[in-house]
Length: 248
Image (cartoon, rainbow, N blue to C red; front, top):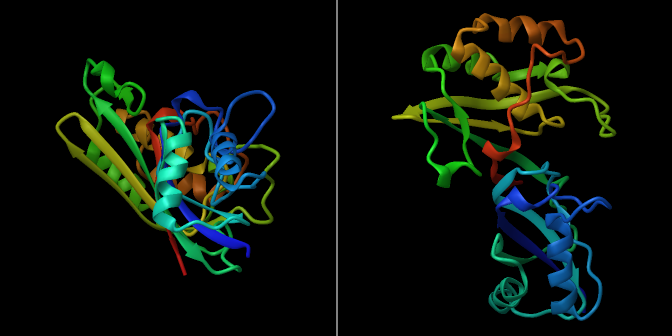
């Protein structure tokens, strides 16, 4: 009897060309499906909640897979982690409804972006923290981040790609910026995000933090709703984590 497994992954994206399978490099989905095929003894498709880019990490990535050789969830976790590389881990799994969809049943997602604001970046943080040497104005960035909250047209903060959405309007539930010593953490929650939207929002807030832009510019750019320009840079992928996904 076919069973659907809801699977929560954590992974270090440094060595991968993103989550989704592609021809030009190794991806997280490829490695997960290889392990699934071994456990199920036949090919299995892993359906993820979103597509993270090259170098982006995840703490709570959710997906599902249908297995025709069902095993208890605890045994499934052990078997999968025994086959996966150490930079990808199954954190937990559960038997799900046959109608569960990891992408379309999402109620919201939280992303976090990590910036180390000091002259020197400790090397062990390099794969996971963006380095900004110029002192950042946290209050200005907090002001700018708050302006993203609500429902807006984020066309000016989206990258052009083959992922063409029907609408560029998205709902941001909250966006906070916190600093502890040299560590600055951006945390944004939303019902959904455009391609590279989070990295673009953080990239622009870093410009606000260095004084290159004013917080009020966030509102101006949102209201313009024009195609993204060089004024809105994309923060590097390595500082970004898909932190949490929650469902209805």
